[in-house]
Each structure stands twice: as structure tokens, then as C-alpha cells.
Amino acid sequence: MTTMTDFLYPPPSSLKGPEFHRVLLSDRIVGALIGSALGDAIGLYTEFLSAAESEEAYPLKRFILFPGNPRDHATPFKLDHHRAPHTPGDWTDDTDQCLLILLSFLHTARTPEPFAAPSALVPLFFHDGTTFAVKIASQPLPTPVDLANRLLIWVQSGLRPLDTLPLGLGALVNAVVNSPDFLRDPIRVAREYWERKMAPNGDKLAPNGSLMRTPPVGLMCVWRSEEETFSLAAELGRVTHADPRCVVACVIGSALVRWLVRGEVDSLGDLDDKLQEALGWHEAKGARMAGAVVEPLYERELWKHVGSKVTLEDLKLDEEGKIGYVYKTLGAGVVLLRMAFRERMKADGPRQKQERFERLITKLVMEGGDADTNACFAGALLGALMGREALPDHWKNGLTHGNWLNGKAKMLLRVLGLEDGGYDGIGDIDTYPDGGKGVLREEDMDLRWRWLEDKTRRKMQDAKRNSGFPS
Image (tube, rainbow, N blue to C red; front, side):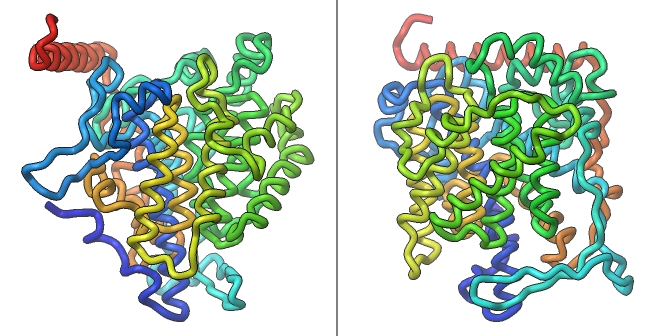
């Protein structure tokens, strides 16, 4: 079996000079992208369970996706109707929607011709006083309308490049995406839906569905300004989620990924300063963007979730009726990031980093709640901080479609000027909104859903039969 490690760089610690910085940035970008998918896949084990139910279902508090020994098996799911359609290593709607943004960016991206002048020479200054620069072509950024189109196709046909169903589709995304005029003006439609259906419910409804998909924004904006990153994150978030709490969470989340990759958040002090900076931008500019909802941010409540003394237990991630609250997911990522900073040592090697990544993500998912979304976001932050060498082998080598995802990560590195080789998104069929396969007819999707329901029912019946319980 070919593992993901076969396709990646040597660890940065084995290199020096400009090559060190190039590989360091590449390592963090791949770490963020694949780390988020791993968090999603591990979080599926406890999604919608309480912390107590999670401990009862997984008393060993350890998850294995790739056992290494052919005679062993991946950790089985607690079998219920939510998990039965999946196999260990699957990601969910969280990663699917991240990929919609990544594929939108890659579709219009291309590397410069071999002998053409670069569009820009972009420098990056490191804490050690060295400078690293790359030659890149100017790339268009995803637009709200393109994301809206891709979301509609995903809702109706699943992720076409991988031919998978839209499992885990959230109620808000489904309602907004299927609204009239969504493709023409998604931000207006999302705002009107919020005003009509959600605002009257006060602070009960500010879901995490836009935050979960924004980590790629921080990666594609790694050479762009903070202003561009903030603005793009807010725009793409508002395609479905108009609540200002959702928008500011997207701004903070995307910017954190960018800052971590660039090494601009490298301590607890940096983290607090940058959180305040992102919040300040939203108050000064984000709330004044065209179509933005003008409502209070509940800033005090935000700091209750991301403040320096907040713990996972404080977040109450399995709180009944509130597990999908966007500040809980944002807080989960920030709390794990703080824990990683506190535990980091100068002599950290790959083994120590992998142990830390696994332990922190496992601790998070054992809290239950919306565990796949929480761990998807947290996995992106930890991966951006510690790099792909922190991703446990027995997780990344068991990730369904992992090599496909790694291939897209490598194309992103080429587009960002961090890996040699050419790329033209127009020639990459996977980046087309329909994956080059066309949109499925409604009757074809109905057949797929019925097949999955039958498979799930048989799986549940077999499990009951094998356990000795009557079916």
C-alpha cells in the first residue's frame, strides 16, 4: 500500500537556509489541510454523543485508522444510524465544504510559464531575521457566486470529484442553498434568511457551518495581506451564514491559519494580540461591508470562549441544544492551540509532535458534541502550527481519499510558488464544479440515497444479530 508519506518532503529540521524556509512553509500548509481532514475523520467517532457517552463507547480513548498490521483493524465506530453509513477514515461535510473553496481557488490558478516573468516577488520575514521570497503568478480568489454554485451542486449531487454523497448536510446550509435567487446573490439571500428565520431566536442560533470550511482561505492567502484574508473570509462565510458571530469566527479562523503558517503567531502572546487584531478589523471594516448584518457581536461572550484561561470543560461542547454554536467551535480550536503552545519544547521532534497532535485531538473529540466540526477546525490550527510531520502515521495513512487530498495539497504548493512543477487548474478536471462528471439527476440521487439506506439497515441488522440482541 502506498502511504501519504511517500509523496511528501523531508522534515524541515533536516534542512538549512532558504530550503529550510520553503519546506517549513510547505510542511505547515500540508499539515493544516490534511490535519483538518484528520480531525474531521476522528471527530466522527463521537459526533452528537455526550462526553459520558463518548467515554462509554470508547473507553480506551484511542483511535486507529491505519493499524499497520494486516491482522488488526481500524477502531470500529459506535454503531448507530449516524455512523453506520461511514467507514473508519471517512471525512464528512466539513472537509467536503473546505474542498469546495480549495477547488474553486485551484480551478482558476496556474503557475507561470517556465521562462515568463513572475507577477510578484513576495518576501516573508522570519523571527530569526532571515528573509524568504517566492516568485508567484497573480491568482484570482474564490468568489461568493462561485462558492454558491459549488455548494448547490454539492447539496444536490455530493462531492463530484470523489463521487460521494453530501452526508452531514446541515439544516441552515440546506435551507439557504435551496432558496430562490441563491445563485444570483447568495449573500443577500443568506442575510434575508437570517433576518426571517434566525434573528428572532436571539442568541440561540449562530451555527458553525461557515467556520468549518474557511481554513483553506488562510492557506491561499498566505502571500496576501491581512486585509485581503479578513475580507475574503468574511465574504465566503456570509454566503450561507449572515450572523455577525459566524462572520467574525470565519475572520479569526482563516487569519489564524495564515498567521500560523507564516510563523506570525508563535507564542501565547502573539495569539492574544492577533485575536484582538482580527476582532478589531471586523468592528472597523467587516461590519460595514456591503450586505453585512449590523448586530452586536456578543464580544464578552466571544472572550468567554477564546480567552487565555478557558478550558475545554468550560466550553461545554456537549451542551444539549447548543453543540453547533460557532463560538464553541472557535473556542475549541483556540483552546487546543493554547495547549499546544504551553506544551511545546525546543527539542520537539516528529515523534513528540505526533504524540501531541493525537493526544490533543483525542481529548477534544472525547468531549463529544459537534466533535467532527470542532476537531476539523482544531486540526487545521494544530497542523498549521506543527506541520505535517505532526500528523500521526496511523491516522493519515488510513484517511479515505488521503492520497487524492495530498495531491491537491501539492498542487496548491506549486501555485503558491513553494514546489517546483507546473499547474493549470483548467486542465484539472477535479476542480470543475461538477468534477467533470456532470450534475446528477434527482432520480439518480434518490437511487443512491436508497442504496445507502439499505446498506445501513443491513449493517445495523448484522450488528444486532452478531451481538445476540433481537433485531
